[in-house]
Image 1 (cartoon, helix red, strand yellow):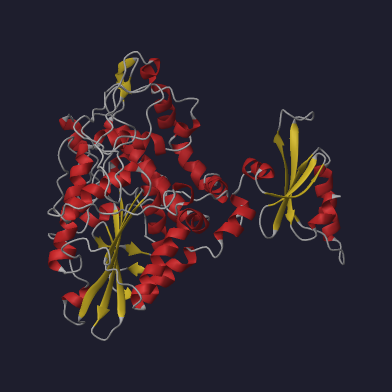
Image 2: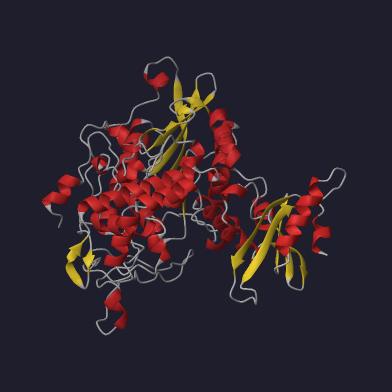
Length: 565
């Protein structure tokens, strides 16, 4: 379905070495606007009804990321050169689900149908004990032409999102390659899924469950019994942003309020405006405040054999390949900034993925202590899980983790009973600020990850939404939202005082606060007088108030009771 022009354009930069395609120069917004970068050697196309073909040298492939496979897998250097005798004793494997349809449908509608009638997404329950087996029903999506909402949606036979046939077949190849490396070559993965030795987990999403079915079939093509894939309750899941945490939005707002973030919006203003006009997204901030939605829509199309979109009302207005390239470069820049470069990246990783990172660390420690019988754990998750873990590992630079992207934590035991670790990202040792993680003491890997595990996330981040957040990076509007969401200390008439962190309080109320803030500053400057320091005072428009504004003071929590009287 793809034109030759698109195929050639997406072939990437020919001069790049394969692993260089994973580590582009993302630390400045000029990466976004430099058209000579193209896709920076990355691949953004895949066939509709067959598995993706792996590149010989494992370049970045958004549609089907490289993974450990027999043709390119290499042993850790000390093991390969025989300077150390060691055996692989444990594998903790994480992967994003495989190819899918988009989450985000263009606000003005889609000019092409999505067809998924070549895939049967089974949805049924079966009794664990001996009772009548169910009929193997599956959900067949369809479009009713009398549905008035279809005019601004998309015709076809898919859900949005859902796994596609190409994604399912990619998953089968993924599992088959893991079996070749970790089963036949290294002898770790058993010949059948012995529940005492293997553990599988997914989010509650059908995307990860469907991917698990495909990958596990590739791992054990002759096994025909059910295999449990464990899930936590979705409301408290430690993956896929399941558990509640009010600090997430605060920190993301802080990250997206910095000068660097605003600069990337400035240099992409023309492109964002053009796309917003083309697809009726002018009033949709989710489409115009970052590149997540446009990138998702374009990626899903190209990765499943479709063309870039055109405006429904005028099909001569279409997204050009160079424009899609810029969208993808902007998406890469945003991921790198959020998870690596931002001053709030560590805190954001903690509130998104800290609990799951803690689970990984505990499993690694159990192996070192001889307290675990598991040899292989496989987690089917999302890009929103892979990204923070890459950030926690300190990857030198991060492109958007594509479909099927994966992290392999290998634990090796030497002949002298020492434990070493290796971390592979998409099949090769990851490059990090700590060096290449190709052979390090297991204890050092644990030390790298431990700072991202919150000590008491439930009490700290629920009670104090700005715990360890950089106040300077938060906008006035972002701070103001916490007057209605943070823990209330005092609520006296039109005045409210809330707790932002262990050290900061926020007072909001009428138009006397600017004067109060100045008085507090004067008092705090006097020797021998103990008064809370004012960090910021500001006004935010509020048409519900007679004055037209709401006034705020951010001050030290110390002695805050006296300021509320």
